[in-house]
Image (cartoon, rainbow, N blue to C red):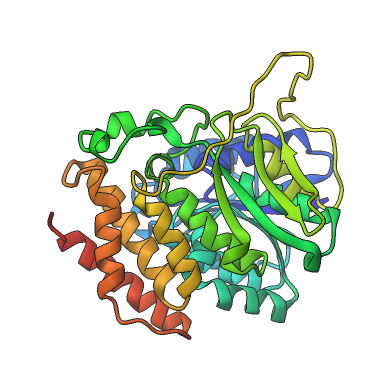
Length: 382
């Protein structure tokens, strides 16, 4: 029985992961769960699965959380240090890193340091500290497997050939709710409009990132570090149907694509059961139905966030940490009504261009710049 810890179990990826675990209960067992402040849902998950540990990362809630909401078989812990304790516990075999944003870095780092298999849904870990994270995984013997549908698709397609035979990888993007609009037409976008994604059901932050295409920009950076690619080997194509999740082109011209209906359970399950494939609960394509698949070049003028992703992937160093932090704050401000939709990439660009660049930062330096970038983004004005 493989023991699984799900960091961020109350989010979109986390809840899908628990559904997968329930379907595979004969081979996988939930050892621990965590949430930042959604303790009621965490308690419900504790009663449903009876894991050994449950962690509420927000230590200020220690006197608010009702212990009776949790299974008596579950030990309740508080604070970010408890996340690291769960991620590195000897009893845990696989850690699902699903905490959204840079906040997920500490738990992922602890899991990698302990040599765990990490199913990585927290792309920000690689965006903020890609070279350091990959070096740590290599040093500790940890296994890092992607959960993002696009990177899982690339990981699966890469198995059709050797790495030196890869010409390029192509990340697909749905285009979000504003595909085909001009930059001028995006001036009046409201949070409600941005949160209406046409194909995926995700949390608010990731959904807004999809609408600005910042999500794809961040995935470009993630792909560079995860698969050790040159930026020239990465491309993005808009595919509104979200059936082809990404493609790998080899030097002989062969293109291998991974396809499935848009549902996160499949990449989650593959990261948990790899290198095996098992029957699961993910929906299937019906090949007797007539379907059309479209592919379009991205519009870098209407969605300048995507251009930032390629620039940051090329430059490396401290750029990923600064871009990620500035964007997180900009999205928060957009959802709160203090920034416009088109201001999100503007804030990110401004903070990125004014930061003190370091080509070989330490983890401490990256965390310091993360804090600086957040402050700059909060005080930025149009």
